[in-house]
Image (cartoon, rainbow, N blue to C red):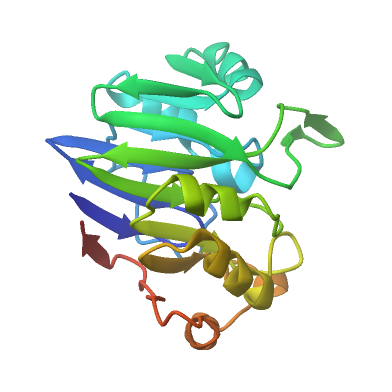
Length: 226
């Protein structure tokens, strides 16, 4: 299984001939190396309904009828745009052909800006726990630090965790480092930083804060094999 980081919160997973994109914010993302024209995922997983996470979901999904997996309110909204969806909710899990998806809590907000002075509320934000090829991947989405991360670490042997470090909208580096300790993941990768001036951070400095020495900075386009 190949896992690649593509800037902001975009993670691509390639497994058994299928491609999964998480939070495909491509258009307007100054850091990503992806283009909507060349990407054609089989599945799209969304953590929440902010524009910088929903991104280009509709256009990408319509390319080859990709299945979009999201919180139920967000899934319903996207289905009205002509996209095939599977709605879920926090604590729920489902076995897809590529593996198991479980939605976890995240402390954040959600809402899609669809025009001037128009925001559509789209349910709760979430994190993702994925079990694929016998490995466990945690994508925290956008979240603050919360103590139940310890439960996630105790109940799941997490092989790789993607944690936001940008501060202002999510955890900053110090809180994310504490989150990494609670989760006890084998590898921790920082995400959601440097896309905008307000979330400017040094990911390499974040890695030095990890007591376990398990941090890994993935440059845009860099992959890790699990």
